[in-house]
Amino acid sequence: MTDEQPISRRAAREAAAPASGRGTRPKPSKREPSMDAEGEKPRGTGAFFAKHPTGWLIGAIVVVFALLGTGAVFAGVSVGSAAAVLPSPTPTPEPPRDVPEGDLAASRLRTCSIAGLAADPRLMALSGYVVRVDTQEVLFDRAGTTPARTASVLKLLTAAAALATVGPDYRIRTSVYPGSQAGSIVLVGRGDATLSRLPAGQESVYKGAPKLADLAAQVLANYSGAPITNIVLDASYWSTADKWDPAWKRSEQTQGYHSEVTALQVDGDRANPAAQDSPRSTDPVGRAGQYFLDALRAADTEGEVAGNVTLSTGSAVNTSTVLGEVQSQPLSVIIPHMLLVSDNTMAEMIARITSKESALNGSAASLQQAIPSALSTIGIPATGITIKDGSGLSEFNAVPPATVTQLMIAVNNATAPNLDVILNGLPVAGQSGTLAGRFTGANAVARGHVFAKTGWIDTSYSLGGLVQAADGTVFAFAFYAIGDGIQSNARAALDTLTTGVFTCGDNLSNN
Image 1 (cartoon, rainbow, N blue to C red):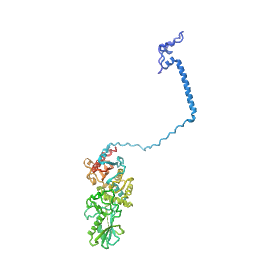
Image 2 (image 1 turned 60 degrees about the vertical axis):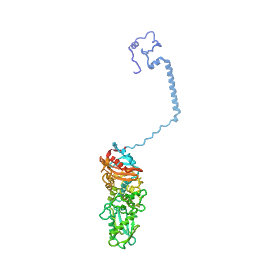
Image 3 (image 1 turned 45 degrees about the vertical axis):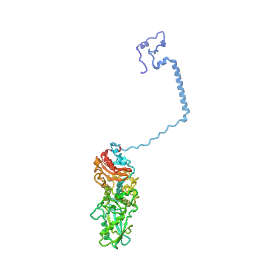
């Protein structure tokens, strides 16, 4: 027992002996410690009570009265406050929590980062998105869902929209009909910029393109009546006033990267039909008319072409009688060429044709409806994007890198028909198209493994497509380097960034 001491043997003997006549034990001396009844010195609270019996009694009485008073107070509170007792608050139930179905899969810890490469100052403001094509995991994201200027990467969307609208077998027709007056014929263009003035046996930049010489021969074989004195040039498939976007720089035209967007033109309006980049004119329709007249004269053996022939603009009235017609190569041939060399003129033609074949008017403004609508039919959500042209030359085009990667996933996985046409047209790093001379030095390890569309305008360099990484993982990616004053060395920085994706493979981390 914690508060008691053992009994001593002496105390036990004394307790067993008979009491003496002297009566009770004497009071202990004040100078000696008091002893208890068993001869031991009282200790603890017992010692206090033994030493101060009167004080203890008084204190006990005080405690009793205090307790009684407290009880009375509590009783009074209980009785007097009965009406004021508040009800217990009703607990607010917690909302149900979502519980995942099935077992939770372990999350892969990836450790290979390209954040340092993405911070290269040559890239200025970078927008980027990298997705694994089989699992669709996002492994890199820098403003990837924010619309931004694409440069020529936009041509991927233009191609996909055309394939979804008219298909890979679509051919662009150029026709000649009788005019409404004697001696008049009408040359009608519908957007075939590949139509060539070169003679048989010579190829322009568009291999297998239709020839003006063939069209002229058909017309002369089918024409009857007064000698031809007037050729009406019909480029009204879309408005000829809508031939140049205000955001485009005229240097694109004079330096030979882009013609005016007219439905009737020859050799993409190039001064040199065999050169991809060749200066363009300020009147592609009139130029086409003159080349056609030259072809008629060269084929005329019976004097069916008058000595003095005028060229005028107008629209065909009688289209029931066809004097001659030629067709372009199918889009399955035109689109890969357009992507490989980044042909701005053909991209604009394909975009306008997509609009017309979508029951729109072929205007530049109509592309905002035509291209996103066509993409939605193949499962590519394109809401919130801005389409100003078909080539990507306008800095006011705005497409999130994530949208480009979604399209490239569809291209790789063939989730919609005809997208193999785009895959066949992607430049390959170090091997073909606009990527033939890129991915050099340390980036050469990715040659043959990057399949992507390049882009460049004065304020942006871009790259978007597919990467087959070193470990075999396939990624869809899109990178935009954007900024006023951006330099051409941004191309090398984009190559290095893409090589980083190639090297990291499935270990690529978004950190």
